[in-house]
Image 1 (cartoon, helix red, strand yellow):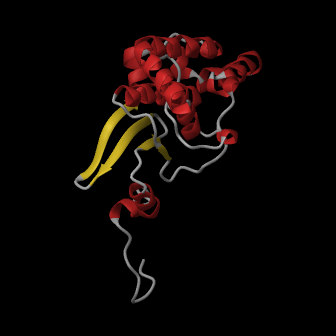
Image 2 (cartoon, helix red, strand yellow):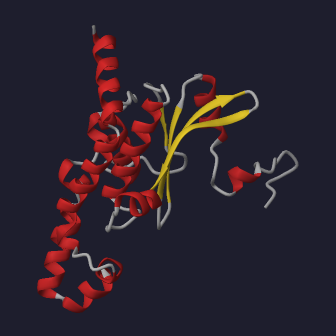
Amino acid sequence: MGKGPRYKVPRRRRREGKTNYKKRYIMVMSRKIRFVVRTSLNHVWVQVIKAEPQGDITVAAAHSRELVKKYGWQGGTSNLPAAYLVGLLAGYRAIEKGVYDAILDIGFAAPKKGAKVFAALKGALDAGLRIPHDESILPSEDRIRGEHIASYAKMLSENNPEKYQRQFSRYLQRGFVPEDLPSHFEEVANKIRDDYKEVEVIAKAKREVMSA
């Protein structure tokens, strides 16, 4: 609703909560490649984007659907472990395309310590991308592995079986026991690393050159 004669209607994507133009302007003017993390109730996706005069160019990308289709991921596709794995995958693909440095773009997501967007950031850092950040915002290793989800599932299975069945119905329908999530996470993470062994070597060599 208008607020007076000088009121200016925000751009459509700003009204829809999709683009913060002020932040975008600052990032684009920095001329740095953006590591863009977005989440929804069901998925996590990452794009490594380079701004050009003709528009944004996606250099590399990864989506949580790929974890299921390509790597046999049985866990949720929008939780912390999934966010980390998507970030890891996108990070490797960015390095494969010659991108070694980026800045984080979380859009309108709240920058809460340990949030999913920072789990994706941790995945990219472990892949070898260099992204400025504060270590304190990253989720702990046990949460990235899904230890908190497994512990909660175990507690429910012992104390409230009905709620356990409801809460983890999608896991159970797939024949997956949520208590096994940490070990399954390691299995999928290792599959991704195996696919990008050569990229890890390149990233390591690049880090050594830059630190010399």
